[in-house]
Each structure stands twice: as structure tokens, then as C-alpha cells.
Length: 200
Image (tube, rainbow, N blue to C red; front, side):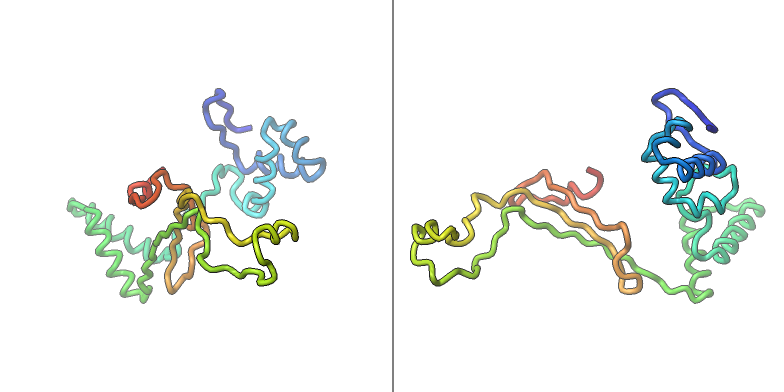
């Protein structure tokens, strides 16, 4: 184990530690590896899913939060050289300058501009159709009851809870994996739910 703290601190582990736990889990099982290494069984299960990355990285690496460089490393290198040059000349470097220069380099490199659209919609839990198929052989509600059938959808007592659905995507990428989200709105009826969209 590389770092052990108090109960309230988060522990981090090196790839070498994770490899040892994975190998022990493969020999025995996840629970036994968790007990031996002082970690939870769910942590061992997660590490086993990341086995390929853990065994192919540096043994001192701790986190796996995505790639260390972006998709366009040449663009990043040119941008870093641009910022270094400005700083060497004792010039002020602002976010706007870096953004503008990044756009210039992207156009020069022929990198297409990808616009991601995010949209939301909502549905009510008590939503029902106005028209439904009905059995024409049923003559009355008593007849339906005797045959073990229903007389159609019951009218909802109200609109019910509102679910907000959010997703993002573009024509170039399609829907972005992991961008979909849904949650129950706190405001009901016709109240505007947009104030709930950022951070719940």
C-alpha cells in the first residue's frame, strides 16, 4: 500500500500495488484479495476491469483519469511554444490570446470545428394517451369486470412528477457517450425548471 491516511482521507495506490492485488485476485478471488491488501472487494473488481491499462503503465502511476495528452498533440506543442515565446519576451499572456492562437493553428492544421449541442426535454410521470385501443366485445364496466378485463386507461389524477432528460452530441460525433442524464425536477406543473439545470 502506498498511502494510508485516516478514515476521512482518500487513499491512493500505485500501479505496482494494484498489479499485486489483481494477480492475487486472479489466483483466489476478489474478496480474498481485498482482505489481504486492506481494500474493498468493489475496488478489486474495478481494478480488474482496468487490468490492461494498469499492467501497461509505469509502476509508479496512481490515477487513470484519461489520456495525459489530447487528440492533437502537435497543436498542443505549437501552442506551448507560442506561450513560452511570449513569456520569454516578457509579454502578458491572456486566455483570449491562447484561445485565438489555438483556433489559428487548428485552421492551419485542417482540424474541423466540431460544435457540440446540448438539449433537454421533460416528461411527466402521469402522462397518458388520449386514445387507446379498446376491446369492442366489452359492453359495460360490469361486463369487463366479469371477464377480468379493464375499460381502458384511468384518467390521471395529476401530471405527476416531472423527469428532466439531458443529452449532448453533434452531427460529426453523434451522441456523446456518458453525456446523457436524467433527474426528477423539484418544481412541478408549469413552473420553469431551467434553474435546476446547473448543479443539483
